[in-house]
Length: 613
Image (cartoon, rainbow, N blue to C red; front, top):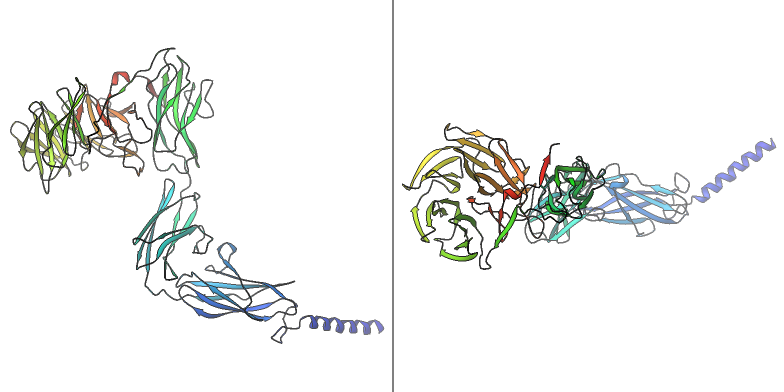
């Protein structure tokens, strides 16, 4: 009995101690759990972009409150990675005030308070509130494109008069303007904001939200998302090897398509193995890296004389290492210089502005500029300024026929046809209306100028009678950037499309597409010994510099294919403008490259051989 009595007494003593330790502060009530602070959240005011709430302590015991955190999110689970946290300061002995800024209108927010004393932590019940709709003074439309090359494109259009606009983005589907996410903000000058997002991971979903600030308020667009591609290996092309001497050679590389993301390095590797790779260069092998750019020429040095090499371009990105075509070449014996398939003929005069189309006739080169006609005499090596051109704008039909040039001139609603006599240096207008629409390209053959217009119509102009004769329609594709004729067959090219029209059959025949995966526009066509070459006019994947790359191809009709040969040399590296503003066929292999005229010599282009894969 004594044991039972002392046990009952001890129980009442312990209960009294517990009750004494939970004496409330301010409210006079008791906590349901010993020492754990209890709180609730109440709404004060709520606007579309901000809200004011109160965290009310229901009981704290005698233990001093050391910290109160307020967490909120648009995620009902209040996950750590999606929530915002605010450290609160006590407003009085029982209430904490919290101001939420930069809220998104018409969205549900989930909140909780975390209250800590010296020993325990208490969490309030979840509190949910909805922000009202925006006042409509600023409306934002945002657009996001898929990943391209090394960026994501984002465009924003804002209606209203905001002070500034921008966007926030990240992997959080509840992305907002709170300092935890990358943001791009620009002072508004127009209603449009376009930008590129970099430094993203591949195979990941990203979320973007545009915002606009006006008079202290923040307005948001709807959330947009994009799935970035899984990093794939790039595609790269190797330039044919040329200018091979006893110790050096010239080659290069070009990115083949825009899938080349997150490029780490790119360049050329060479060695004595037909399957040369970075990990199998052989005894004579090495590699060199170049600029991370669309196109680059590279000179190989310190080669051994009289040695056979295999060379190929490589590209390394997040997806791995990929290789281009393999070329085989042999260095010359010690002391021998390399052949030169490309030779610089002359630089343009400093007074030449508005460079246009190059043409050849009677031993001279003619440059059709925006105002004047310039002649370069190949025998004397002199530039002469000829007659002022009639009018201001010439469109791309300059055809050499005998001692004359036939040129189209664009005017409002129609095209004029002019003839320039090279020997007399005189202009003569032939027709006021050359065709129903503007003329794009043409070639002279057996007394007729065959030319293409914007549409599918094919026409011919009788030089002797000054008459236009309808000739037919290309039903395979519209337009035409270049025309040439081989063995009584007319060939027409437009972009990567290629077709032929045998005169004896009078029927169109579509040919295989151009062999380079690139956009092609305004190529330069030249004729050397009845073989037609095409230069430049090609843009690797999506070049933002409106310039071409100096690739060179010739057409082999028996094999029905374009064959790549030595690239036109460039002096300053990078992409270069190999062009003709018109679509004339230049005889003799002359090419306008930047402010220089080069000439191509096929008999010197014998240094390399493409190795079949």
